[in-house]
Length: 141
Image 1 (cartoon, rainbow, N blue to C red):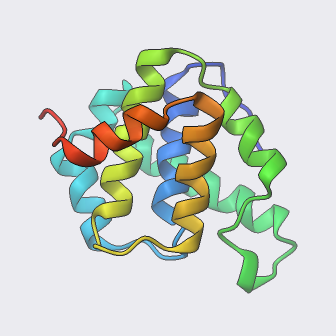
Image 2 (image 1 turned 90 degrees about the vertical axis):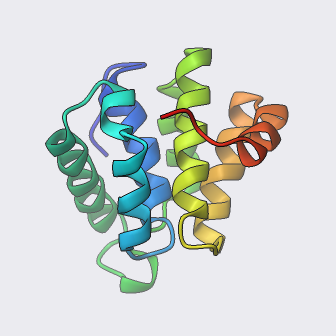
């Protein structure tokens, strides 16, 4: 897995990208919600940079999955914890969590993979209360 600077826009975007691909497919509804919420801008990226990070993440996941299609979009718990640890700024954590929740809810279905990413982020970052607030309140535009 490539590394990014702690609290960088790229490290934050990679967590959102994990939520995006965790259900093993990239849906139009998920991409639309990221565009509507200006996710790249909120993370400090140009739209094309978010695309590049999603692409890089998929490459990394394929390499670490040993080319097993069944596990292509899965990430082991230790690696997920390491990636989540790259974000330690409280405000950035909250923004990333809000974007992840929006992505996961975009298709009105929460897959096991999406749940794993969200639960890991909430637990590791100590945002249990914020998770409920994020689910109840719409994101600011």
